[in-house]
Length: 517
Image (cartoon, rainbow, N blue to C red):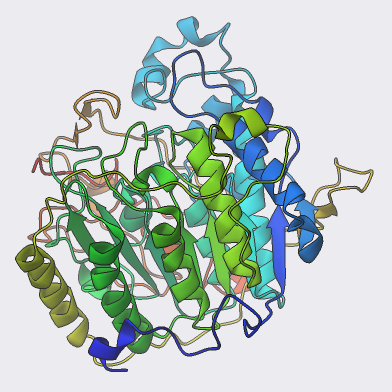
């Protein structure tokens, strides 16, 4: 595919209108998700998921999809990526007991941006279970799966970050890797998708592409020079943007870059994080995208006819979040919801116009044409260094995760998936202390770099039965290689060794040496 022609669309029929090609779409929603409350004044409001669902119902979109109530992820499911002591902490901490666990609160970065609230662990189980359930559906024949409660891309192996506790995206990608040699992750949240990039920084089986505000802004990562390491070199792409970017400027990067990614990487599945804080007028954001401009990314990725997992993410002007994700559900279905909004449970939120779309503002676009051209040229040049899609020799594949999701109206919400699931528990304990600034404040996170290359017992990441190369200790980049490549967790491992204990030579701490722009 010629990058110059990539902006005209993907390789399928139009996504919307009478000629739009139908897709098998499934949608995950838990009616209780809107009850969770981060606390007074906190900008993250799960209530926006309930508002989105109400719009989908009133627009008649629910009856065009298979609707599932997700089965909560279990401890062992979450521990496929996260450290078991971190998951144990999330399960046990409560608002009443948190003052007795000050040391652990600090260790796991819980309490400020990521507060302890009633039902915290159930909330994590719900949104993670929905994302993994969506991945299972894609592995078994669905074309598109949607979980607007997911997309919490900042969570790390051993700590919460940026309103995110459990990284449902990493867990979903691990599930997809059971059936697909390559998975593409695309992030259009205004914040850098650091947790996902970090998890897959050293593998060529997952490519991560993040379009984000870069500068004095949380989490402070995502430099265009951060390209991956070792086998993962050039498989991380970062698109740094400035304030006020509009639809035209955004698409002048998104379509050529993603068209080239699809040509070169040839993923078997795509995960698209649709954070709505990149919309114009967001409470914490500074971009100027319209809902249609944001949804054009969904439309474009849908057009490639590759299994697609759509996830939520950020978004803090909740009436616009609900508008956006409702419209993007329509795009997934090949429908064009009308602008005039039907009367719904939250109708008063959408006044005074009561329309699905809102006009972007007249804010200044600080992204010059020259800057955009330079970014596009640099990233296309990086992609040109990937001459062909990587291939992976599959050993005996680990069993599929069995998740018997319930239709929303079924009566047995407590049913769980197969107790013999292959999900493993990680016995990692250590996490390095870090200095942080809040997403609500200066929005920068820095971690100490001097401890970044410490290895337990002086060793390196084990590769005897994981099929991955040892991790180099000096990567010569502004980002240190992650403590463990998430793709190494029970993907290529033969089933006859899946219960062997983890190697003791595991990297300590999170990926460090974050740079301050």
